[in-house]
Amino acid sequence: MSTVLDSRKKKSGSRSRTATRTKTRAARTRTEQKPRARTAAGVVAARTERETGEPKLINRSKEWKLLYVPYPFDDSMKMTSGHAVESMAGVEVETYKDLCLNCQKEDVCTLPRPEGGVWRCEQFEQRTATIEVRPRRTSVHENVLAQFNRAADTMGLDSNLRKILAKTTNETVVNFPVKMDDNRVEMFTGYRVQHCNLLGPFKGGLRYHPAVDVDEVRALATWMTWKSAIVDIPFGGAKGGIQMDPSKYSSSELERITRRFTYALGNNIGPEYDIPAPDVNTNAQIMAWILDTYLSTVPPQERQRSTHVVTGKPLEAGGSAGREKATGQGIVYLIQEWARERRFDLSEATYMVQGFGNVGSWAARLMKRLGAKLLAVEDVSGAICDPKGIDPDELAKYVSGNKGLIGGYPGARPVDRETFFRTKADIFIPAALENQINGQTARWLKVKLVAEGANGPTDLNGDAILQEMDIEVLPDILCNSGGVVVSYFEWLQNKRSESWELEEVDAKLHKRLVNAFAKVMNAARTYNVDTRTAAYIVALTRLETAYKKRGIFP
Ligand code: NAD
Image 1 (cartoon, rainbow, N blue to C red):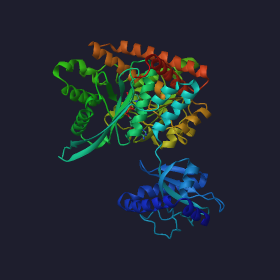
Image 2: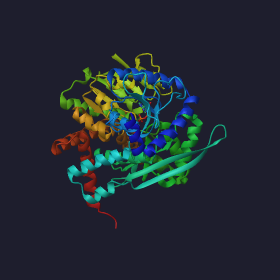
Image 3: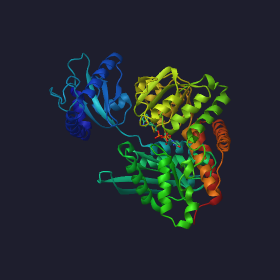
Image 4: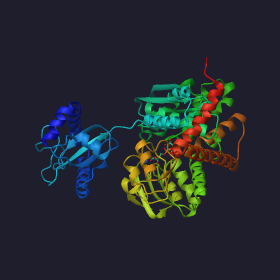
């Protein structure tokens, strides 16, 4: 153990300081907030790990995770606990604090601790420690660029275009005040990033979530460019959002936040310039508020020809039939294409879904119509499973009366995250957030196909593991493109003052996605690459053709 302490002093001075500082703050926080919950998790973890000898992460809060590490090193190994976490659990650590396994029943560690903070528990026969870590957030934009570079190398993308597409065009950050119901004023930070408008106006959703930041929005905007190019619609890529937890605000507060954000964005959006749509925690109602606010800022003579400033609007306010279910519908059309190519019978298939919001719940319900059986669902409130099958229509009804959450659903058994990921099913539809399938969770999967409903649900490590495990992937930029396709239909209907029947919308969507699927599979065969790289190649080829024809100003 002394080697460990020496190495910490020599190699990680700054880390030690961070750890010590964090410890003091953490001790304070623990005294104030629910210490028992953490204690229970720690003890369970310790027992499990003593049996398996594997390091394990246990979710404790959104930010901090509790890790039990049976220290395997002998005196010749030089590792600090932070390094141990990184190398043993594959977690990139931002900061960490050591906890004493013995005194977790106490709020603050009272046992003597060795200098440097690494705890060696005397009660266990092996060297042990529990560590709380704050994992470093993987940059989603770095993931996009890595995917982009891989495809650009494979196809030999024009070097000038490569430089252009690696950057975003415009990045707008707005800080704006909003009066709350109790007359307090709160400040909010909103973003709109426009990646590329080579093929048409910027287009992409708005997200309300605490994790929204410029890195995430950049990535999401970039994915939108590829997506529109794959399905051959005349849009570029953009994305935006507000960094906040919408569940903390009343409906009237959300309306004021949305209207003020729209006002702050000003001319950065517009029906022929940049067209927002719903994304995580935003919906048709929010689009209607954006529409109304935007129209109030243009001269009355221009209002009627500006209704296509947002898509995903309610039907009564210029929305399109089929837009609400479009992303889920698109996922299912593509799964059907995949199954048709492989002669796989979907009426006998089993599937699992992560995220039961707009995308996940529609995909789940439409899969049921094909006869497939839903075995497990996870959302932000937890996970449930039932080997006999979960009825997605019943679950959707429950969720709509339960603040949008699956937690407490009586028709299935609650399970932990690992059990959810280890469910044996044919198809997994991740439809929540980014980086959910990573170096750890990918190894748990026992599925044949991952149909990516979410944007960026698989990080680079996860992707490599899926390939190694021969799990097929319908990549996000193809798989969830149904939403932007029907947004395009809505935009067209508004411009032409038309209103299409649902059957017409669905038929047109189906045609576009079948074509896109064929192009991606063709590129995968031609270049002998995975489907994600193939999807990028299809998108980049279209952008390259347009770029070469148009050239660059001046
Ligand atoms: P939503 O807000 O309607 O639903 C999000 C779901 O994810 C909720 O069920 C929520 O509980 C769950 N969730 C959030 N954090 C989670 C976590 N840590 N673990 C498990 N579940 C979690 O959002 P949505 O519109 O359905 O979007 C879902 C994904 O699909 C996002 O990645 C979004 O960018 C992408 N997408 C959406 C559309 C669209 O038309 N809405 C189009 C294309 C792609």
